[in-house]
Image (tube, rainbow, N blue to C red):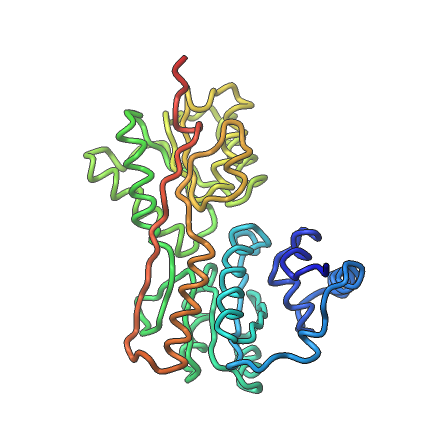
Amino acid sequence: MSITAKELAKLLNISSATVSMVLNHKPGISDKTRHLVLETAKKYDYDFSRFAAMEQKNGVIHLIIYKKHGTVVTDTPFFSELIEGIENCCQAARYEFQVSYFYEGQTPQNHISEILSTEKKGLLLLGTELDMEYFQPFSDLTIPMVVVDTYFEQLNCDSVLINNVQGAYRATSYLIEKGFDAIGYLHSSYSIGNFEERAEGYYKALRHHNLPTNHPYIHHLRPSLEGSYHDMMDYLHSGNPVASAYFADNDWIAAGAMQALKEFGYAIPDNVAIIGFDGMPICSVTDPPLSTMEVPKKLLGKIAVEQLIKKINRDTEETVKIELSPRLCERRSTNKLHL
């Protein structure tokens, strides 16, 4: 039995989007990666005929992924699952799915020219690291468009995103209600809309529970496993105070900080409790397993495509902002084990 594109991505430990771009002969992939994907596909009898004789499609849905820091939007399970949800929904609705990337320093006009030069039915714009300056040229397009994972108050544009404020509020309130007396915040040192909204939810929870917002337990850490570990180690070596519990902007920050705390002699959760955000696979393999606010990543992609198709078919003229609520997932990093 021949291998599927999803199985191929898993075998090579790369994203489904990367495999799709190679198999669809799209630019933006290194020669080394392209060769690896094609040779492995041949080795495991991938069926290339579906690309040689593509079944009749309703059109093309194009996903543009913007990378600014290269730290938040990376080849992680979060974005792999999001893109998988988009691709699966496109396939079910008989739309061809295409992906391209652009980076800070590149002019969006080049990508806009490419979009307009080929027949496209709709555009998804991954805005996790996107700011208003880079989005503005896309706002003038007449092609149906949905922005994924961010929202701009200034613009009348459909958006599908996470309810970050609610998720952070619930995570922080959860720690407060468990009786921890000093709730700190492991805040990303890289600013994006999602993290700023999570900060809003954190402070909102403190105010709601009549706790001070001006305290020494706000630590700015890089939003990666290695970066947060080193930044937290620097903080601990400085001799500054440590909170009894922390909410972290994402699971990478939480896991890196947790490792630093453990190496410094803090027991998790007996001395310090930690909860993250996103619901990454790393939460299950940290020691102890990490509590988190789990984001329905595939559903986020699916709903974005469904809303875009409504726009393509002119089933709606309304502009919507759709927010998905994350789910609290309790694990040992916040639950003391009573023997």
